[in-house]
Length: 325
Image 1: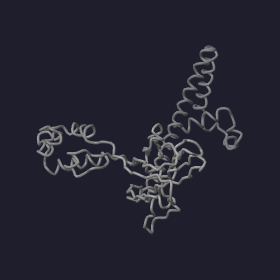
Image 2: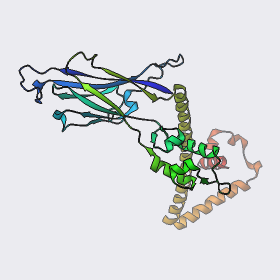
Image 3: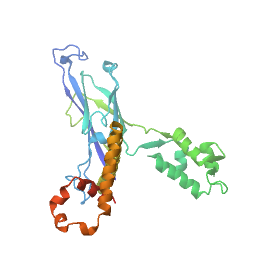
Image 4: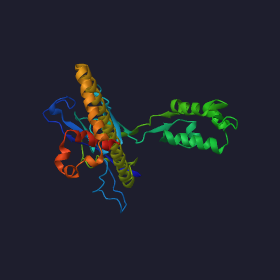
């Protein structure tokens, strides 16, 4: 969704002390000024949009870097000054720069927009061919592919080969090209970082702050609230699905560990006392054989129906085997 970011640039000042003879002296008596750059999204004229449920993004969300060049000899060793709102001062509505001095001068401000997803400046002659000057890489590739498809420039024998027409030949300087080579040259030769927004602001040491204020409107891209909620819901479902998968893997690993422990205990028992281990195994096998071969008529239902019958040592192992089979 395209929204309007309203930008305010203004400065406040403190006049120099009359006792100070040099207005350019870098002391507390020479006066000072504070340059402020602030911004906020204008309200969306949509009755379905509620800002109390979906608060608007802050100014720092849309600006990746701010560079301020102070065109004054007083600040030649302190210029340019750079801010990185998106990383250094997150969730802020603006930045400010304060310095001493009482002379008026122009400040060159460069604003680098934080595009999400990333957008690139398309260099000519490709921008002229596609009619695109600023766009994301996938959309530029799609526009180029649409041009190739509409002009029927694919080789019928090899669909990965493009037969360049005169406009494409002027762009890539080749008669034929592989599609993947064209995509690589697109990134290396024709896509550049977007140019910053250039603003010249005159720092003043007279008048009211409101009179010194400059206002600009910038078009920015903001996630649609409904799409944002849908994406958050999808991400939650994916997280829950991933958690279920992790739990299943943990259960499988726990079962494997249990099997390895039994195998280890078995081998340790045999290692520590082979004779006793074999004798105990024979006794256990004999008991199992006796139970299996025991006639059903010799069992006492009255005894088996009581809970005490199932508190014997063999019960736990019998239940595990029953559940596993």
